[in-house]
Picture 1 (cartoon, rainbow, N blue to C red):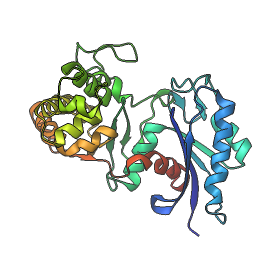
Picture 2: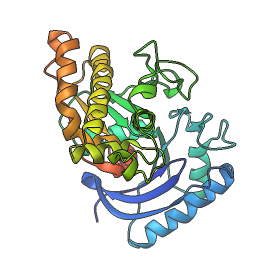
Picture 3: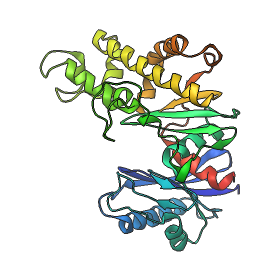
Picture 4: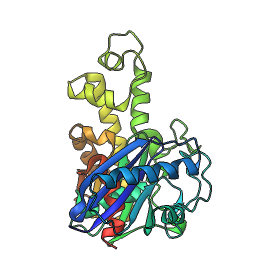
Length: 314
């Protein structure tokens, strides 16, 4: 049997576990809604149960260790979750040590966006590159940076907060409290907010029909734009321009071989691509203009596969 790792993707909504083999292949999978409001002990118990469930699908498997992708801020070297806002009651929790004690395997901890970046770099769209920036555009904007074959961690593992670089002086206030964050203008939430403001319940618009007269989401905008709706296409054009501005900043900061775009809004990449590329051509210095922006390949499993690679490819 090939080398196997047990991997976890600890999210504020969903907790996911998998056995992952060489080459990033998923061999077994289990998931459950995260008991995010119930504190560390409840979630660690969930992790233990999901470990047993995943391993029961492959009873002969002998995992070499455990890789965990978890929400930041966290300290990967110390194995400590510092104070993740999506998990209530988690302050300075030594998750790696606690799981080692429960599951009797060595544990590697990584920021969830960094884990997804590792997954795409080692087994997905970025395979074969030396440097890349992974950007996930969904409810918020997150990401991870691979530079010269290594994750950029920075002080206490806090580098790569891509969504909170300031790219404008005007916007809705970001959840972090600042104005002008990349996330505040280019996330799926921001796209949905603009669409909701543009329309009204019962106005007969395609966007409100898709949302059943509730708030419009970024996914609704992508769906309507695919159908040729003019209002949705205009919103997509503005979204792509904001993404292009943010990506230009990332090109100038990190000079990667590639930018990989993941998250729910990346499902509309075909609609966004031309405007993103045009904005980069307009705003980037000439030496950076040939860097490709490509859609992610691993989908929702990028974080699990990347977490497993912490064990399989030390």
